[in-house]
Length: 202
Image (cartoon, rainbow, N blue to C red; front, side, top):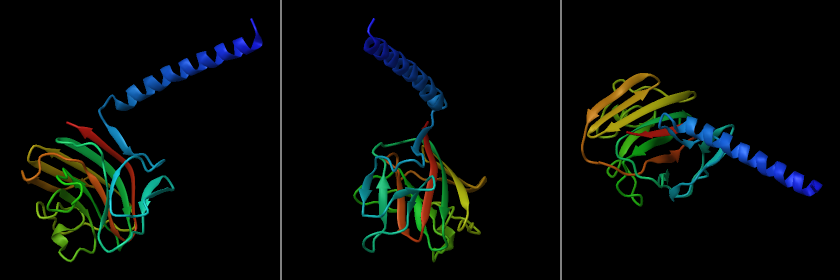
């Protein structure tokens, strides 16, 4: 058998083994139903509303600059109805950001067309600041998130909405305005970083 043929067969066997291993790894990673949306390695595929400089730095998805005055968003290309979201985020003191869920209109994303799980320590109305769902679930007192890594756990099941910030439940509310839709990450001001953003359809 020619040396080139032996090499080719060897490469095919390695690729097959790698593919099998990849298949096992992927199956294990998805066995519990969680889908990783932000992995800290690449920006990924999103629809955009407005222009911000979303980029990867130090294992996180970061934005610290935008064009224009209006808030900007990156929006998933998949719609979700009932789900859990896990996300880690870091915000500076000037950050105005959030996770917008069940967005009904991807060309007009705000707290009227989505549920806005807020990240905004300096919000003028602090009851709907960090840890709240704007106009749906208040927090009192408002937690402070600036300058450290935080974790959000967000559950939407039917009209039941629950937010847990750093292991503490901040919202447990019922609201039926929005039944399904993509979710979005907002950048409006300051510095915001996201890592390990995952969603699990229920």
